[in-house]
Length: 432
Image (cartoon, rainbow, N blue to C red; front, side, top):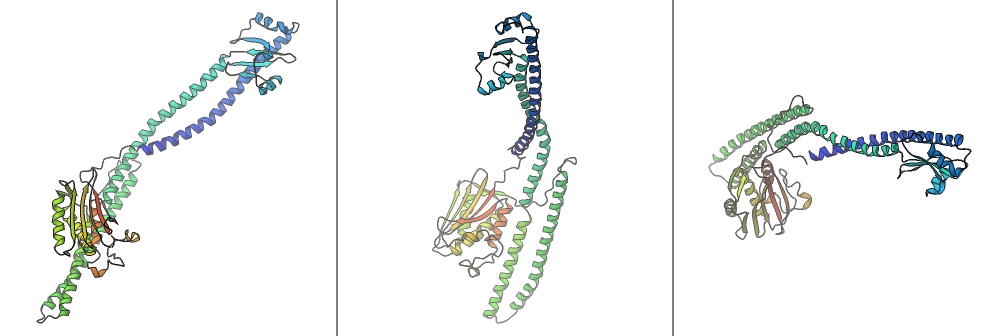
């Protein structure tokens, strides 16, 4: 929420600053014009006084005569020679034109008496000092308004963010396979229509998945029925020949394919329920089982970090995934297969690597698709139905994780499954 709050708040402050600058420029011009008119009228009055009352005196006596008048003003008035102050060329030119010159550091103003080398000095002017202090008051007021805006912005944004966080958590649950997820938002919430649409969407998805599961079950039943009749008729033959034996093998392959399709459909239909079991003992058990039907020259290695760690996963599903990866590795490994389980603070990871031919980079994103086969060494001749890695990806997704393939340091392929720990809650996202 912090990032969104800051973005919205900065935009709001930018708009406020722009408006303040525009209005401030108009305000400053108006005040400057009033100040100039005020001082101009004042100095014009002094000049008129000099013209009417001091015209008979020589210029060097104007100062003393002005002081004798005791004018009732909030600032001092004085007459000095024009060369008393060091002015820049532009100020001198303006002064000779009869304009008022401001000495901002001293809050004093000068105007030349025409036809003489003297200037009238007004100041220090408390009004100018007030305007200077007023500018700081404006800055302080702007900062106070900017800070006070954070409070209504925060309280306006927080309920929206809370509802959006609820939708985000629900979307993550759906992506992890929990299609029964529904969101409950306050009917007065501005996000509530989105919540209703989300609930309708998950309901439709759940209905579609249920129809798909039913369809798969029906297809499997319809296919298995004629297969059972065919197997029965073949068994009635008194003298089976090689062709009949091959037909039995083909029927078994079809049965196995149907079983894998049904298994993948069940995995995709719901999230995995997890248990805790020892990692290293489990790895050694599955590796020993896989080595029974493998080439005797293969070297098998198993490692778990930490050695006393517990795997948090569905034992049946994760065992099926590892068996698929091991069967895949032993088809293509030349000499070595390494199985590893590692654990971090947030995730667990299972990897299987071999020293075979590896998988081309451009085909790694498709290797987990159903019935996907590579064109070179990994063909139908090596066996299988092309569903093994697709099932691995489905099992990883059922655990809220993912499966991927990279290059192995051994020279072949490295398949990995990574999933978050089961004890990781999904709290309301913090301000970030």
